[in-house]
Image (cartoon, rainbow, N blue to C red):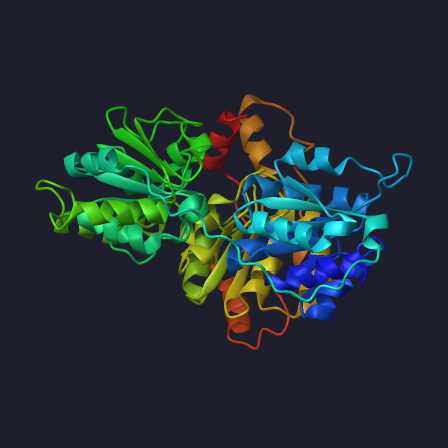
Length: 543
């Protein structure tokens, strides 16, 4: 058996059922080995799109994503999506063929490339192919993006056939550190707030039970939106996307516990959201994450679920302290004013030709879309509108590709999410700049016949730059463009296409949602561009 076949069989044996990529000579055999074993291959139009598909699939499914590319340019074409995945700690294996001869035109330094973007690197050896492939998968399953080097000469080596068994992935150590200091802080607090991040995505149940026991309010970083959906004490996203009520309440907390969150500048509004008088605790399985973005008063090294359950076990049945802030009046305020839908604003749509206020658009879409949805948000000036106005059913229903702040990844990420959850409507929200960068993957969307809705917040510009540089009088010719019929472009790819300038124009979306949704629908929403977004002002402050 060829080494390439062993690698494919081992990955399938570990549970790989989908692989995304573009096939060339270097990855032909390993990809076919996966397919022969029973995996589904999703052919992308471009390796960059394939990388984002594998990323979106992994985030939405909770499984390891697999990307298969050609050597040399296949790897470099995938680099931006690979970087986003690595920075987001997406569990993903990249099957990367290697031309090892330094004079080969395909040669690149794969270990250095992986290290440069924060990915792990493994290499398959002819004499240990099954062992090396399994080690790469296990590293990914623990929460890493792994580049698996497949030297061309090694792939074609003959080795012993492999048919199992598949070694079990060792569970993460359940050892819990002393939690008495955290317990004491919770008992002393009158106004505790939990902020859960990416590292808490699988820990809703123990965190809500602990919050109930100590009277804490619940919030999340943007990457964990949906984690506490439906809980009456849920403040939703902290930081730049926080509602006025959430900002007010977090701003008066006397204890903030960050669960699997590094409290970066987005989550804390550059440190201004959390009051200086609050005790700040950080819980994370990775001690190197402690204090990386701000000083904290107390750290607990351990998995979020294990620490929360350990504290619950010691807290007893004493319940929230007297004078805590979980009152009927606060419950009413959160219910009535805890969503952006309830915050008044002056509609800025209209004009000639007409445009629609992006807030009005987002609210109308939230009413139209089925509750069971996956919302995928590209990067750009528009990104706060779907993130704040579109509800999601749970944490798996929100895919936020912002770790590298690259526009153009959202559409392909949505395709991966749709493959992962075909039972839900996938909604890709993108800006016009990101859409034009990635529109080629509409070919893939049509080929897959997925129920995909693409909403373009189209302001005919790179809006972030317009609103950042425009007020200072800088010329904007390089970042503004003539109005383009993006719905017609989508129709050319085989999608349905509709232009939206008013709420009434959403009737076409309503009819598409009613079924049968046999082809994707692209909505070119001509949005008003009268104002910049405060969340992008925060972004530029971080540069």
